[in-house]
Length: 352
View 1 (cartoon, rainbow, N blue to C red):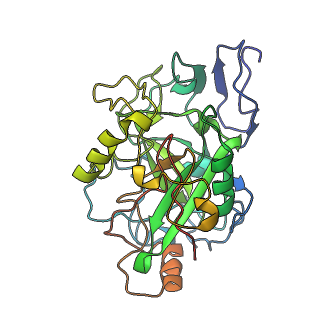
View 2: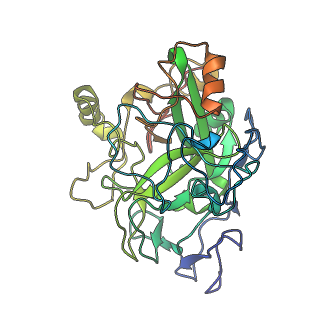
View 3: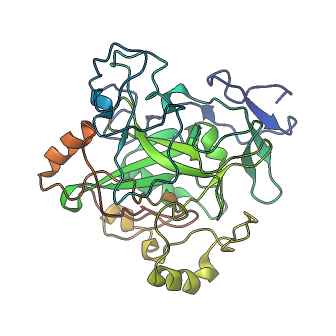
């Protein structure tokens, strides 16, 4: 790939650089947004949300229907990073049907890349992603975008992987009323964006937030957890534990017992756990996925969605809860969990 080539092919507002220019990562189709994958229930490109009727350049909190539960970002379009809440509100941005202007402060993730990023070859971790610009704490950096898969297809792809394959599938699991779970599987291996190059770190500088814009399919948005200097590698915690709930004693014991099975972590941080995140309860037999048995097989990159959930304690039927979620009105006080962990396994729970 020639020097100065944009890895995104002009599909991003800002070009994505590559280093060294003489090498190139394995071929994939670049897409800045999620696309419909096999076995998916919802097309992520379909506009299903109604828009607000705000005829202003920027929407007002508690007046705009998209912001009826509070602000998602501050006046500088920064995502709060230090709020201590018993629960977290789902994030809904203004969408294509809204009457507000393109400069609305509730339009952040949908604007795409705003910083110069570079895909580069690391010493031990394969390809990685770093910023060429200073990024202030709370700023949106990039999405983790790819094919949105159905449960069965995610299982099939996981089972087809070998120990030498790089895994890209991420699973996000959000809790609804009465234990119902909303699961999102995204795989950028064949079709994806720059987020596919992000590596894990035990002290990450990014955190993930599911953000909904045009439909119920969330965009997996990554924000700066701290000020990030130009030239610094970008990373997030594949398990989501760093900026969510701490590891329990039982989980810690499981981690120690299963260390012989886990892949080494090369993040180099002071608090490095030496191994990539692991959840032994999700590792089981190869046919578990097809049987839908709370068992698992294959490697998986996943994210613990805690304090970033949808509805749990609203005493309503599940379909009503979903309706409330679509209106941006659901809150959650129950920690979520992840379908799987980085370099580990896919938990099969059987959707209803």
